[in-house]
Amino acid sequence: MPIYEYECTECGEVEEAVQKMTDPPLTRCKKCSGPLRKLISHSSFHLKGGGWYSDAYSSPGSGSKTSGGS
Image 1 (cartoon, rainbow, N blue to C red):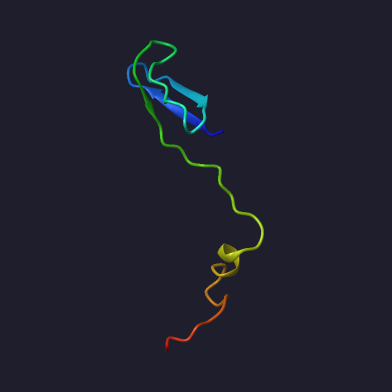
Image 2 (cartoon, rainbow, N blue to C red):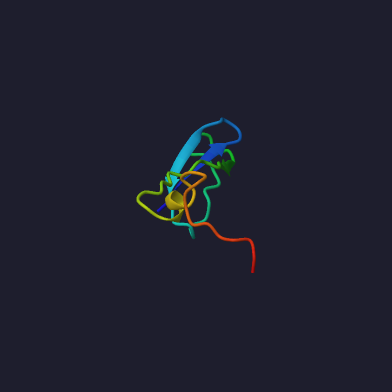
């Protein structure tokens, strides 16, 4: 399940919540009961191993070459 971050618009407290994507968002701060807004964070996404992203884009001269004609 993803970890969502929320920031209180009144006190600035940041909360993390492990939620399903279908769960409703948190709305109130645990510290002051102020309204929360969802923060946009970077993901921990990392591609490993071989594949098109490393084979075709690793260097300018790598990959298969195609002709421009039909």
